[in-house]
Length: 162
Image 1 (cartoon, rainbow, N blue to C red):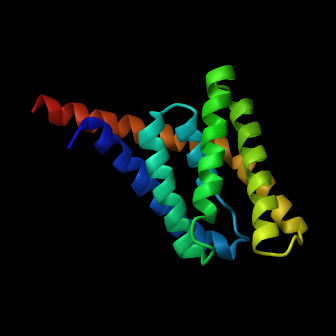
Image 2: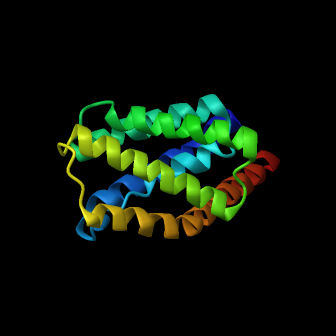
């Protein structure tokens, strides 16, 4: 297995953990959605094709867990990923406030599309509160994803030396 594939296995597992976490515990707390933060993290600093495949698979898994139309989350997450990738090429999404703004815009997009596709266009104040909370928590999640990547890289270097 190549190093690039092994590197993205961690992102896939991390995404699955987020999906299960937000489908169980976070659903009871109001339905916070942390997976778009991982999507923006991958769009802001990873290989294009490998990240897109991971995001496509995570979107399909999200559709499976949420009961939404198959491909809905995949298309939305890929759209967010392409947007983050293009913005990162022009601006470099390295600053905390830039990433928080990207998370906020992505979550608003998700909210608007999903409320039209699933909920008939009705919006509640709680959903907007969830967007704000997720945006505020996103720097900690970006740090967690970076720590997981550095841990994975360290493990891969140790195994390549052995």
